[in-house]
Image (cartoon, rainbow, N blue to C red; front, side):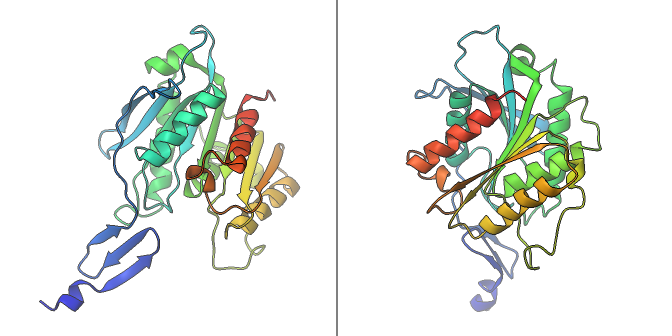
Amino acid sequence: MDSSKVDEVVFDFPPFLRVYKDGRKERIQNSEFIPPSIDPTTGVSSKDVVIDPQTGVSARLYLPKLKDPQTKLPLVVYFHGGGFCIETAFTATYHNYLNSLVAEANVVAISVDYRRAPDHPVPIAYEDSWTSLQWVGSQSKEEEWFKNYVDFDRVFMAGDSAGANIAHNMAIRAGYSDLNGLKFNGIVLIHPYFAGNEPIGSEVDPNFSRLGCKRVLVCVAEKDGLRDRGKFYYEELGKSEWDGVVEFMEAEEENHVFHLFNYTCKNAVDLMKRVVSFINTSE
């Protein structure tokens, strides 16, 4: 066999994914599985659950070190980033970030592991995420950590990059579909992956007014190529017929998802504080 044919690249999505003519798929960035644990730094506990045995969709649950076991806590449903094709809920990047978020915000969290492209192209990631939200609603009185520690009157969605895109789409769908009674107080969109071939301003989601929450926090980074679309989203949502409050935060001199890789820098600390404040502020 001609080795040049075998190694011919038919799709290149740097720095994420490469697909070869013979069908091989190469995820350029490492996605090593990190097991659940009791984090020695934060005291946060985690465990894995299966959402759908047929598809293999699963998630990781996080529980903070409890100061008062009788006090019910907010729930954050988190969708990881990675261009819909890399990273998982179980990589070190997201395991470490969720440990920090759960400890800082004093919340219970579930980090959804949706199926990824190209083996499972979009919209499968959206369908898996919706299935996961349905599962959360159905498990409010069944799953031990939900039943014992979650205040289901304070539920949020959050995500970065592609995960922020998913959170937006889930909030739109939640505005007109039932989730076993699950309602959302707000969503956090960190460096949202809103991309397109058309110029910014030529596309606006006509379903803005149906967004299934009352508060939105949009966070962008100054040097991020997706920054302008994130800001445009914030501006258009504020002008839409949606009956809610949208907030905006910009990290100066920073690139896309910088906070996941340089989490001790001032801008990352400030971003974490803003997210924590948003989650813990009463409507």
